[in-house]
Structures are given as C-alpha cells and as structure tokens.
Length: 162
Image (cartoon, rainbow, N blue to C red; front, side):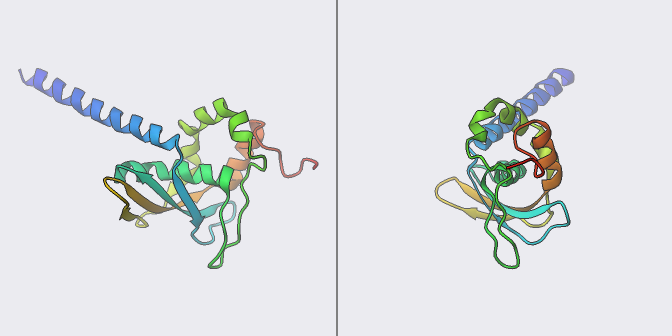
C-alpha cells in the first residue's frame, strides 16, 4: 500500500513539474521581456538586467536566462550609467524567421549554457491581476554565443567582408 501511495505521489509531482516546464517554454516562445545594461561584465561577457513577465514568479525567473540570450542576439540594449549601447549580434532582423527551426531547438536547451543569473539580484513587481514582472541580472557569454552562431551559419563573422 505504501509503495502505491509513494508511486502516486511521485507521479503527481512529475506531472506538476512537467506542466510548469511546458508553461515556461510556452511563455518563453512569446519572449515577453525588457533588457537593459546592468554594468560592465568581464571581457567576453555582457552584464544585463532582464525583466521577464509571467503569471508565475518562478517561471519568469527561470526564463530570464533565455530572454537575456534572445535580447543579446535580436534586440541589443541601450547604454547609460557607465554602459555602452550594444547592437544585437544578428544584424539582419529577419534572421530569427529565416532560421526558425534552428532557434526553436537552440532556445529549447543550448541557449541556457551562455547565460547565468547573478545571485541576489531578484526584483519582483506585481503588474496587473495575477502577472509578475521579475527582474534579474544575467551574465551572457557573448563571445562564446557569437562563435556558436557563426559556426551554425546564422550570423556572419566579424572578420567576414561587408
């Protein structure tokens, strides 16, 4: 009897975690976020603050790494407070649609290895009924990210001709 109860409890827990992950991935594909400079990172990195929107504070925080990578690739960010404005890595605005299958797979997993959350930087703001805006500072490995995108043929290298 205990084994059946334990199995049922484990199954429910797995379903709940899987449902949260599915919701997180679904919300990420909408890419609802704001990105801004958060200071100067070490060489080869950007230090950005990402504000992610979700009905779940936890989901918003978890998705902030994907949002930071997306922002570095497609949006860039404004300077200020000692920061220099950064253009997006993808100079062509249509590259996201042109390589939709690549980016779908990329943001399903690989993107996470290029970003890490700086601990203790969480800010949570309730915006409207049941929605949250969660801000965290994220370090993005921009040089490694650029190399991966160049190797995949998604963006042109810095040393390629104009």
